[in-house]
Amino acid sequence: MQIIGTVSEMQRLADSFRIQGKKIGVVLTMGYLHAGHVSLIGTARKVSDVVITTIFVNPTQFGPGEDFERYPRDFERDKTLASEAGTDILFCPQRDEMYAPNFATYVEIEDVSKILEGKFRPTHFRGVTTVVAKLLNITKPHVAVFGQKDAQQAFLIRKMATDLNFDVSIVVAPIIREPDGLALSSRNVYLNPDERQRATSLYKSLKRAEMLIGKGERSAEKLHNEIKKILLGVNPTLVDYIACVHPDNFKEVETLTPPTVLVALAVRFGSTRLIDNMIMNVA
Image 1: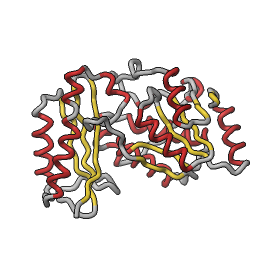
Image 2: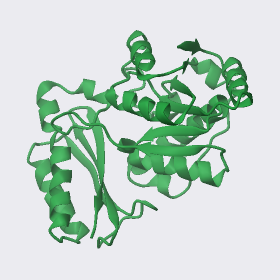
Image 3: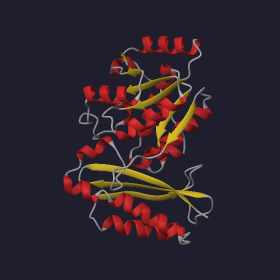
Image 4: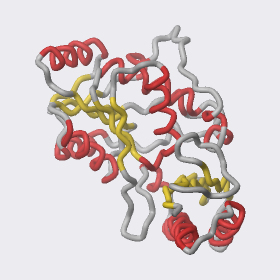
């Protein structure tokens, strides 16, 4: 595995792969890799000749008072996991390499970036779409793999790629979970043992909603109430949102209609904010 730190070298190498006719796959991460990231790299490996994994803790997607400074970092461990997962190139730029002192250009998607996660983190998605646009321009992939856990982010990245005619296919891979259902996240390390146990309520509440839909429930309000009952039963610090949305446009629905609905949650345990979601079949 080759490690690259500069934009110019990464672009030159990506160009050489394309000239050779090699298919490039990329997985964009903020490091502190876990089995979810490994799964994304594995997906990229299956459909690409060359796999690039990026590690960059992007400052522009963190709002005031969020956890940019304490966001977990372990580069040596990341190198090992990335290599073992099948990464050929590890791109790890420094902040000044990505954002010059006079940087003033941002990519912002209207409407959907302002709801759910965007409502609680107003500048978050502007930072995400900007850094993703930059990293795609730098690594020049044919395929970029993202995780379903960040469902709204994946939706917005796919929309950006379509709206701005990016020459890349966006693949969204399934959520990877712990045996007890907790979605893997680098932020799970913040949870103390009690919070970690209570956090399993996210998955339990989603499975409860899925079961009710399977039995014929079509009212988003009733599903919301059932989910909230399970979450409040474990005393979270705060429930930011519970939403039933159409997977194709992220608009909230009052009545579920076929073929699917996406149920999304954001819940705080102590100082840790966790998100989860599930796409559910509606017969």
